[in-house]
Length: 172
Image 1: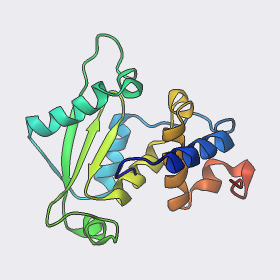
Image 2: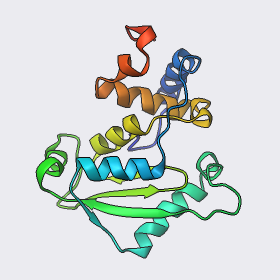
Image 3: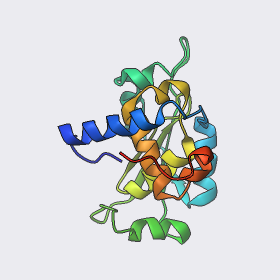
């Protein structure tokens, strides 16, 4: 998960990861609804009935050309927004060392048509959703999407499962 302004070194690293993987990745992207089911099955959630939060999700998709292209002509974006509850598996997220909450709640927004997701307060959850969601053919052509996905599947020990023919990870 990118949490700040990217540096030229970060961009060069993402491009190197993309070059090493793009020819072997196959589309495996889950839908927005599958992403919501995964999230709800794994973590305790509270639906937010907050039009402003839903608008943030829609605006993030529509101002990003890569994401906006995933909304078919004539279809409207369909956002859902949640807060992860601080119980059960949710408590593990709140207690994770990379969480940056300052006594706030973990916010999740998912745009159902494009399948895009956002997480505020917990990079670990963003990575979990990224690893589960996978990539579509358009994402595989985007160095940032591939780099974030590869980082996420490595973090969760899924690299060999996604790319079994590679066995070991390629050297940079």
